[in-house]
Image (cartoon, helix red, strand yellow):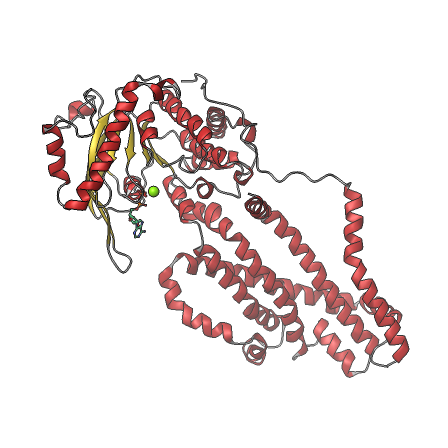
Length: 285
Length: 302
Ligand SMILES: Nc1ncnc2c1ncn2[C@@H]1O[C@H](COP(=O)(O)OP(=O)(O)O)[C@@H](O)[C@H]1O
Ligand SMILES: [Mg+2]
């Protein structure tokens, strides 16, 4: 039984197609260069803005140092706890609920053509409704508290996740699906090792769109009937002519968006490492 | 034991002793999903004895993949039956493994080579030590022990197909189905893989049905070659390969008997093509005619 096989041979001749390792420049050096790349354009833009602002001396476009001062004073205070963190909490809650709902429903629809045929017209209609117009309805249904804002975020973010998940699930390779069936991989295991993994690139694309939408919808929902949050604060500053503070709010929103997208990219790199490698290999050969 | 319980078992003409492992009776498959119905397979009947290595040759598009999918329980036939050890196949049976032609699409790209081979064993709920042992043995057998942690897309085509073979071997199936597994690899790799299949088959005692469109490959590998006609498909001929069991790429292929067998299979395929051009209902008559008259392909030894 355990006789060694004469045909076993090493693979040196066959040659791996792994992308050749680039010459190492040193991790620190690369990080420094990358930081420089990221910061170059913002620094230039702020410089141009400061120059133009100083020249025009307009009340509505305060100089960067005024905005920076307002930024530090505003957000490194208890406002961090009354406005910033609640906003971020609502955003993340809404995004998470939309992600779970979108992926769950998307898998269901993707796997079952009959359910898809049944629900598609309704979904197409709901998708066409712009989420901000749901705010008045949500106020009636859910009041003006957190749940209304979360619902607005969910109602907008769920669509890209749902539709991308359906596409991803439907596109599972039939050969791979047959292979899984032959080896008795069915039910929950099939979902975990085959369907979700092979739909992951599309699901992640949907989640990325949803994240950008979530920030927008968070701000919009807080501009209506609200007493806290970043959107509320920015509108309040604008109405009371606290212009540097208004700008400081906008800068903070931009930074939050940037940080979330960087975080997302980190997660995506983990989840889709295989996909990038596969695509690189296909391009190479 | 199985043979004694079943006195009616029809034995194949060359090997009387071994019990039947796989039995295909009157298999017919019509695809009627599209605008026109396509009769991919008309009427296929054959048997595989336990531990046999049978090759199935036929021109492209004659329904080889269709047949294999029906045998594997991936697709219900329109008519006829498939039996594995006497039990009808209606869903993928647990004792069967399939190696597909599209190696690039049959491996999970998000799993390492090791994880790909181990996945079916996890599904079988084998204990960890047994799993690691089987995975290591299988990867060593196909010469990929060093690539266990690589991803499939980091490997060449021939190596990917070897991973698929290792996965099938580690699964310890009773029947191994292979659908043109070497059609897309280069000639040198292909010769290596052919020898690998013979070696694995001898070592494991598994029943193998090997589908190919390559006549040389069929004769080199098989104990028996089933020749399929082109569509609508029937079994055109059943050729016993009486070459010595120890085969070698150089000497076997130079053997005069090898050339004769190859000529016979080739002639049968040509005959199938001509027969189809004439009348549709003739395949059964032709089999009768072959036994009566000398083989038209001109192989006097037999
Ligand atoms: N899913 C399908 N729907 C309709 N026709 C099909 C389908 N799959 C295969 N066929 C047809 O059935 C015939 C046999 O195909 P196939 O089994 O793939 O042949 P082979 O594997 O011998 O090349 C071909 O004519 C092909 O066009
Ligand atoms: Mg085929």
